Length: 405
Image (tube, rainbow, N blue to C red):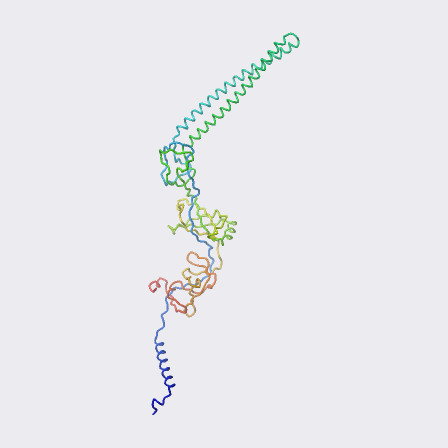
């Protein structure tokens, strides 16, 4: 037999290494493989999808009117309550009209006086014209007689002077008539102004809309077009919705607007189940350099007052459709260090993360510009437990909730 001293040292080392490797192999063989990860799957599909832009907008009244008084006086009565819907032509305020009715009475009296003076001046003119006619005839006859030596020259000259005085009296009468007519026109204008002032004492709504807070109460004195309005009225039907779109879409918006009206859907943030329709009416003429967007204004009928001035709303602008788009559920798209990615299921039921170029987001889906082909299977739920090469087990989405970490 060989003693241990005769065994080479290298052989001892080789035996020790084989024994250690054998133990590790047995331990590795004994470790079980990880169970498959339960996930929910969906297939990427090719569809014709609507080309929608979703933005946040604000509601704006169209128009806003500040109601002011056009006459000064005491505010006698208010015929509406704050926040009330009023129609165009409804009586809103009454101002004390007594001073203006007195001014009307005085102006009408002045008109009556002027008309009487005008009639008197016309009568004087008629009398003087008749006298002038007789004087001119007498002067002509005695002038002829003076030439024939039958009448004296002095008598003829005296009748000529009388005729000239008559002509000057007629011209004076005509001037008096013109003056009286001018005074009559002035007093008639005063009558019209007094009547207009009386009409201004009753203030009517210039449009249909909703009144705001009452800014002047009955009993106060109001000024002509004072600094503060009596009330502010917002027209709420139709109503405007302002929103911004990226400047990259300006060319598309202008091209489509030249062909047809651009429809929008407006959804209140307080009631996502209801939407009202409208159409774009105004595209602003300037791009905001700070945000890189351009402002659009849509008109919505809002007959039932669903939208409110100053309200924030979600706006969906319809720009047509996109054909042959690759679409996946929005839940499949994840964000990573290298950008957006999805977990793609391979034929051996393992997954690989794949970086994609995401396009527009739709209501519950997303367009994929690059990285996914139609027909490929992607993970839409359960991604938190996945890693490259992980095995998966397709399950109903409702059953994943209880298996999440």
